[in-house]
Structures are given as structure tokens and as C-alpha cells.
Image (tube, helix red, strand yellow):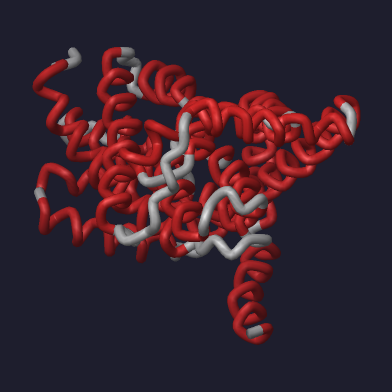
Length: 341
């Protein structure tokens, strides 16, 4: 295994030496993305989620959401908190919370895999501000992307509950006040640690996580830059181009966007917005797919968050593909309804 890693990494090291300027520029670009976008967006949510988990608030919310989450998605009520915060904060917050709930035995492995596969989404601020207004220069497109992106996540969660481990034992129905009483008892656990200890641990864990994400973003920016410099990206582009040419000639101009989006979300969406050879509806549909797939940079973040648990990566990757397909279809269906100009 070590030999395989060595063979895979050595060409990158050689390319780094041959193209030092491109590597440096890519690393700086990754640092700027982390500093200007990810750090201010994720760090507050990481602290908030750590505090809510440490103070036992998640159990209280889970008790209230149990009557909704079990029938619809066959997940415990605490999963509803993960879905809401995942939708609001964006990737990779849902993976972080899912891993913590799994370690505390509130989720089975199957439930955790379904949850992280559906609750990992882009945040609405990014979709509205960066994508619709910043790249497409059309705020009406935000409505289509929001409905398609989050609607696809809910549809996927509902379908997975019916077709994946559909024989999973449902929780025994209890009265609401009994669930709240149990949650309140667990809520008292934090008093043994103290509020300042919980706050300190929240800051410590959040800082470690946000710096880890920054390192992965820089690595993938350099990685993509090196693949482009040695022309390897052209092979990926050719494959995507052939697949799109089978589907529709109007969509072949989006091959570069989908190729870039395979690795990094922002780069892929920017390329899709600039693909003027394709109809705008297809540009938006491609953007919906890229947002849902999330790019290998985000996938690496998810893998790092799940590595200390038994939650597998492959079901997450498969969910991302289906999420992207559903989101693209919804976007195409909504386009004639909203007809943004």
C-alpha cells in the first residue's frame, strides 16, 4: 500500500518542482478562499454546533423533531437538527455533527451514512450571493437553485429511507413528555463539566477543524493546478465531453465546467456561468449538479471528519451523484415556471 501511495505522490512532487510558480499561485489562491470565504462562514457555526452538542440542546430538539423525522426519513429526531444546521451552514458541517452523533450511539451506521449523504449541502448565502448574483448576475436564478438543491436533498432522504435498509427497526413510540424528560436528564450532564469547560472545548475543536479544512483547500487548489499544468485535466475533460455529446449537443460546452466541478465547486460553477455556448437553463442545471456533487475538495473534508468512525465514504459519494442528478432535473423543470430573464 505504501508503494502505491509513493507511486501516486511522486509525479505530483516532480510536477511541483517543474511548475513552482503555478503551485505557489494556486496555494495563495487556496489560502485566500479559506481566509475570505470559509473561515468567516464556518467558524461561527462550528462553535455554535459544539456548544449545542455540549450543552445537550441537540437532545431536546431531537425529542421535539422525533415525530417528524421517524415517519418521513426513518431517522431519529436529532438528525433533524443536523439537517437544519447542515442546510444553513453548508458543507462540511453536517458530516461533523453526524460523526459526533454516531460516536454517541444516537445513530446507527446506516442512519449516519444516509444522513451525511443527504444533509451535506451548500449554504444559502453562497447560493444566493456568490452563485446567482456574483457569477450569473441574476438573483432570480437563486430561487431555482435553492429549490432544486434543498428539494433534491429532501427527496433523496425520503427515497433512501424507503429503499435502503427498509427493514430497519423503527423506534418504539413514546409520549412526547417522556422523550423530553429523557432529553432533559441528558441536558444536565454538562453541569458536571461546567459552562466554561464546554466553551473552551468548543473553541478548541472548532479551531482544529477549520484549520484542517484550510489545509485541504490549499492542497486541492495546488493539486488541480498541477493536473492542469501537466495536461492531465484534458483527459478528464475528453471523457466528460464524450458523455455530454451522447446526451445533447447543446450541453457539450459545459464539459469543462463539469470537469472543473469534479474537483472544486467554485471553479466549476464559475466555468458553467461563463459557458455562453450552452442555453442558460443547462448552465443552471449544471450548476445544480456541481453544487450537489460538491467537488473532491469537499469530499476530502468529509472523509477526514468521518475517519474516526465506521461511517463509510462510498455511500456518501453515491448519494452526491444522485443528489446532483435530482437537483439538475428539478432545475430544468423549474426553469420554464420562473423563466428568469
